[in-house]
Length: 414
Image (tube, rainbow, N blue to C red; front, side, top):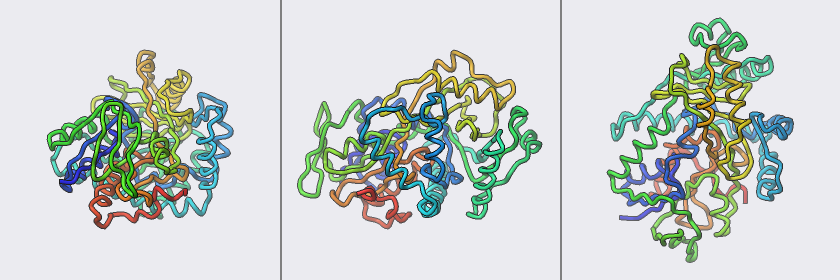
């Protein structure tokens, strides 16, 4: 049996392990934490074919500059001297063009639709049980500007063959009466679905353990041993791990890991925050508050409030003002819904690995024959978990991949 080491215990790492097991590989999974927190556990849990426009889109640079020095804004960039961030930001700027976005749209749409199908196959397989609902996602807006932009995206989504409808204020109040009068309307993407991420992660981990996958917790990778065009082993503070194939599903830490073996894969950690409310809220539909860049999800037994994007380096620091901004947005958009101080104090954060062009890195590198990258998914990490894992397994098995990987190449910024 060929052995594969997967570095990273987030959704991409666990899904890679799942499909590798299905292909008959022996898998060892390493993570630098105890695998109980991070972006894969605290995200909004959306499966989003509606998110077919990459983060690096025209206009985002201008908006980001306006928000840059406001630490409570939806998009916050902490001023700091960081050459890797400067390089990434330049690539991001070059990617935020109409022509590049046009090329990215069919790629993201295909990835999201196929990943949604794989989630539904997982559910039907009964390998393990998990919460999954196809109620769609609302994009709710208060301002005229947001309404104009969301209507344009909705019209494009419909042209792309996605299920979406524009809801008036009155219709929105009918299906979700908990909204305040300040919400003018919404786009309802019926093509989307939602889950409870932390429950799914735990159940998948239990299944992987039952299939013989070895988990090595609190193992920080310190380097690799290379022979020619192959990686022979990697070392942590505790041990040396040898394998036939290596998968880096290491999120925001991927750039630093691969730099030691001569690879340049630009990724920056975009921090998101979330807090859970374990009491009735009367919120029944997953919703993105467009003006606040915030997501609310009715999960299995609780409601999750999540959002914001913060570029401040790879850290898990909780900025009080950013958590308070979430609470303020909830109070504006909903009636009789308020996040209490003790719930705000339990807020946590996670790092989304953001590539400069908004597309993930999935596939082999040209420099090493037995290294596969699965990182850089930005805010679509949860949505793209299964398709990423499936593609990793197909690459390693040298099978035809279900998606053309050319535009996802880890070498594309060489």
